[in-house]
Length: 107
Image (tube, rainbow, N blue to C red):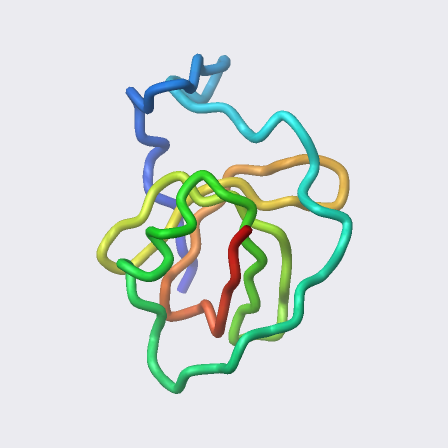
């Protein structure tokens, strides 16, 4: 089963847009140059209200499949979060199932 990110939301204040991504742009600078310490892992899925506190902030994410990366969330739904993932060179728009997130911390 593949997971498709939700459509890019439009009309966010302060986001001038760019071709192919109306109303939304990636952060203009790279994320912090360090990897934070992973917080305690909960046996439950990530709550949308908890990760909503990280909207438009650099957020480090640890997934249940052991992947980890810097993420810049711009949208939180009932079961998913969408935003920009740092691939080591630039930001890429992506979506994540909240069930796939083991833990996160934002700055």
